[in-house]
Structure formats: structure tokens, C-alpha cells
Length: 111
Image 1 (cartoon, rainbow, N blue to C red):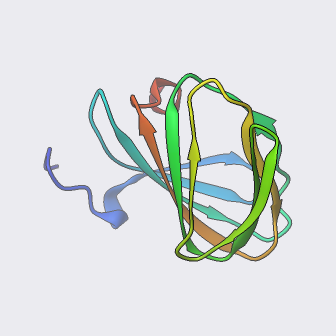
Image 2: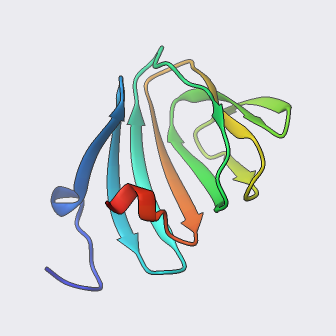
């Protein structure tokens, strides 16, 4: 396995909840990229963590909340979630694929 390339077919696959598939892609101590497939109607909710997070919507439609501000996002949109701010997915309106980027890496995803 290369330390520089992570191929989709080789990514670690996780099932963190009903209707969600997470792939752990490339990461270092300071940065992590994950791909998530989220099915329409998947249960969602609010949470917080100390990591900065940016989410890019590859396909689909989802409603997010960040610090009480709500918006529906679509393919091509991004969401910035500062560390320790309550945020989360409120509704999955269509089958969706998103890319989550965290700084620093999410140790809790690795162990």
C-alpha cells in the first residue's frame, strides 16, 4: 500500500449509522479526507467536535445546520463548520455523496 495514494477500491469502509457508508481516504496528523454516501431519509442530528470541518457536496441534496443557521445544499456547494460549534445534517433529501475534510485528523474514526 502506498503512503501517497489511496485508491477508492482500497479505502477503509465504515458504516457509522443506518444509511451511511464512510470511506477513510488520505490523511496525515493535521488533515483527513473522508467520502460519505448517505441515503435519502437517513436519520441525522446535531453534534460538535474540536476539529474544523469543510464538507463538499459531490451529488444530492441535504439540509445542514451550523451554529443555528440552516441551509439546503446541492452538488458543488460547501459547508464550513468551525471546531466546537454545534452542526450537523438535518435531512437527507436525495441520495447523496459528500467529501468531509477535517483538521486535525479524526482519531475516533481510526480506532
